[in-house]
Image 1 (cartoon, rainbow, N blue to C red):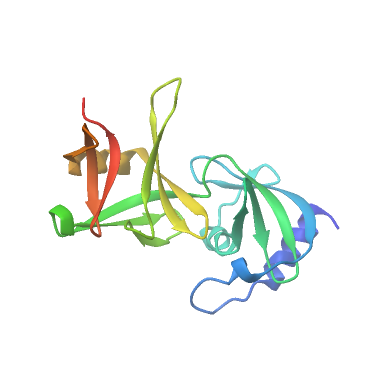
Image 2: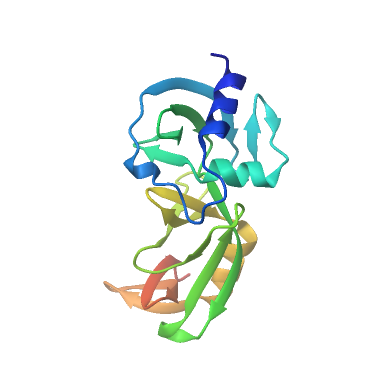
Length: 187
């Protein structure tokens, strides 16, 4: 079966019209090999080296992605194919806020239209590159999958940041759903 045949077969197996996400965490089909699909760091999906320009198709694929360890797969009840992900499978591209202070809620929208409120079940984390010292912020979206927070959205978070002392260090961070998320040490 060619890569194109595998992709067409995957599309044929995905149920359309239903609400909610498929239960990919419950499916354990046999591994069928890798397909030439890649998600770039900026959230662009590629198939056979060409960007997938149809947002509904990208959205459809995004509902059947699963991460097992460090590997990413597209999963249906009968097929599991490997794909490459450069960083995170999603990008948080919009931020809205409700409330203020410790009762503030930060709501993110991803490039595939998932809406996620940061909080205990959807934590924010920031990884600092040891060489460049640049931050890479991430938001837990679902089932071991994260969104890289877009730079513009991260700047919005920095604007919302407050200082809090934790273990003798002063941290900049943001509140959402009663949780304080550290985004960096206070300069």
